[in-house]
Amino acid sequence: MPVLRECVRDSNPYSRVYASQALWDLARDQQTTVPVLKGIIADTNLIEFHQWSIGLLSEMGTGARDAVPLLESRTNWNGMFSEQIQKSARDAIARITLPSATNALKAIGSEAAAKAGVK
Image (cartoon, rainbow, N blue to C red):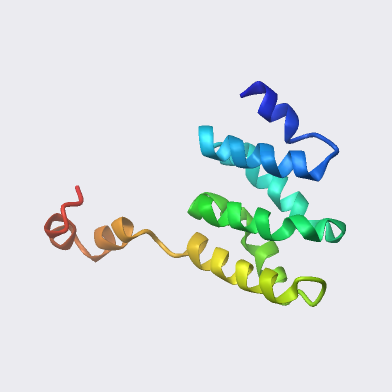
């Protein structure tokens, strides 16, 4: 993992996103990857990496909550790839902010959770 953590600091944006994906896939390292992906999305000169980065944040679910304000700004993006980026951002926000089914069952009550097999 040390090599991947070094790659997320590379000057090449492709290397940063690819290493972030690998860190997420292998180690579920949100602490390292979320700030990197936010930096990519915040840079309007790296628009070709936005959809990929937004997709990765979406995969991280609630662990990417810090990215929601930035993603919200992308729901109004009017630049290149605007339709795709807006849709990806909306989908990511929904996935990040909605509680999991397990948490929803627990919130409803222990009886409902037990019926569903959740402990």
